[in-house]
Figure 1 (tube, rainbow, N blue to C red):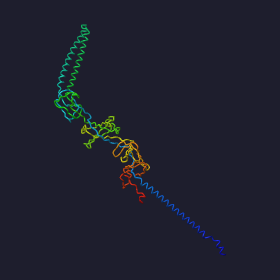
Figure 2: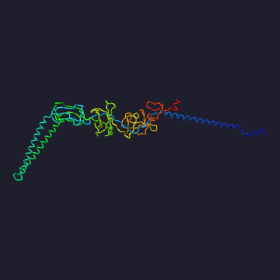
Figure 3: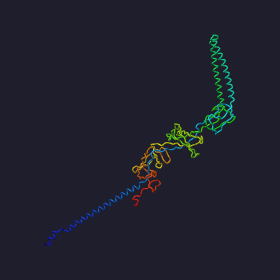
Length: 418
């Protein structure tokens, strides 16, 4: 076999090597492309993660809570004035001179008890005269009666005329009327004489004595008449208080009302809301309310300045929020709620102020998440992160709080790298 025939039958080595080299180059290029693509993808993912974390870091953390359903029973404390349940001035009903008085201020008297005695010489003389006139009228009546009976008997025999008989009968009736008038005058003067004794109208305390022995007494309650005594019943007192118009609807008869005095710390007088004026005073826009208070030991004095504690029921359709969850702006009172991670400012209407809490009557539902201590710079639509408020028990032990009560967020990956 010759060498030429051997070389013509073998494949060319250089072509095969070129093909293998091309394949290796393409494989290397593909691998490099994959690596480059993965690197770019990882870089873009890292940048997106950094942007997400940066946006999260820029959103403030706020404490949130839910409004309380309903409103608690409130206590409205108002100033009041205590007055005697019954009090009256005592006047004389007869003219004369005071001969003796038996009770001075501060004395306790029973109904009908003798307070003073008056000497009435003029009434005594008038009574004596009236009794004499009564006797005269009685004698005249007896004479007129016998005369009328005699003329009636004579009329049966036609000894006298009917006209004369009728005149005698008319005189009898006139004498009867005169007798009755004289008897009434005697009774009047006897009752006037009984007014020599000044009696207590009811059980109470003498709060004033304006007369003394020998004083000239004029009858009547006006004009020349002068008040002798002033009597007040203090076993039960009336306390009058002015309730603001905003709370007047809750001031109903039968409700409980306690009374306290600054000079008697710890002492509570239990009372009952007896009645209201059912009318708002135009000048003060208040409702006049009467509270009846038992005072068996008389330690609560009439005329005292007291504090009345009225128990007012809460509204069932209202919610209660802390004062720290409200915003006071030119638009009015509002609260900041969080919905889907965004701030929503809600205008609300306030019912009662309980000090640390406010009663919200409209504009807010119990399902809302409210921001506690919202900053003044807060605006609607702002992104925030939420954390439970301290009083709702959402904080883990050992976590610190900022000055507004928010729980700091955990450190993110971007913060760790920084």
